[in-house]
Length: 475
Image (cartoon, rainbow, N blue to C red; front, side, top):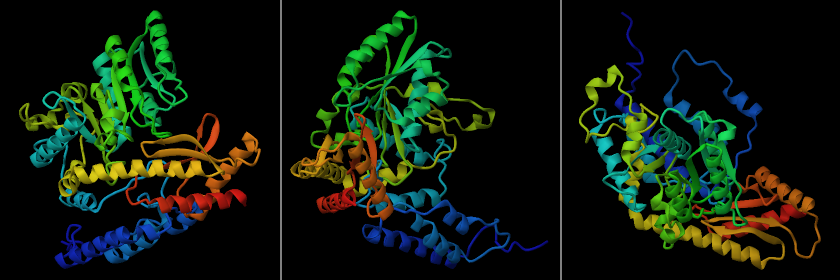
């Protein structure tokens, strides 16, 4: 018999230690130097093909050699989503405790699908979900939830649950409502679930980009007259474009009256519940049937982690529980939650660990202070822009998001010209790599959008970026 040179895909203890120390050192070095790096990578497909177009190697090579290649050629060709000048999309501020917690979860290869796989993982996830339920004033004894890969899967899980609870097996006449500012993941989820275009009602928002109550009521009334079944409404607690929070109390009242499932997509903004004025801003969120939160955004967790909360945990188990014969010996009793019965995934990563360990290490106070800082920073940026004769605020600072455009007061520029200048600013900024800043469309106008949820971003960071924008506008 031939000897196994790779010893069953194992390394010696010394080799593991050497490799592990090098990985940890690289991560720490990144945390210490990320602010000094350029936040944007502009590598082309041709450049990447030259690096990676190769056949899978048949023979081994030193682990440190592989690591060095990755550090030099992969991680350097990625946008730094934790950089203070990453303003686009929703940045992903992270923290070191959560990074190392993920390493523990992966290193021990914890199966977080069922109780028998890891009672510790299940118990910790239950406890952490209870923290979230209490935070949003959901019923702890009756409520429940699940940690997912992100907001997209949380929204899909919520809508599948709503369909099952409200429609059963026949959803041919079911109608779902959302605003024109709802996140694209909701439309994707609706399509995945098999709804037709004619079953979707996209309700226009008002001048503040909030769900139009009157237009919603008219749409529901018309659908009922036509014999259709309004079953679900998706509200936003912090839209991606503007940070706007829909009128949740009014929407909750409509849903209660019409027997409609209320899902609140709070992937971006729900975390503001931790801020000084959070409960006032999110008034009515506790009346939702389901709520999405995305801890890898404004709760400073690394990718991947999303979260779905529901008022009644039986809605999840009633939607997703299957009883295959190969799982019959591990079902346990009713108190032992198998999270594969509460969502789409059977094999699940132990996502709750990083959230749990970072909350325990830093305490909620640190998270509250970071969120308050970001909200105040965005308001300071708005004040700076309003003092300038070159910038126009299109959507004011809302949950640390602000939209503005270059439109000098002393120049009588056409709308088309203004749009072209702002598009040019974004393109030049991305090409320079100095900041990750892109445009969006609001009220038919091309605008620059800043999402300021990184607690390491300073007012000086933003001022220097705006000064560079002005330079690009004149080129």
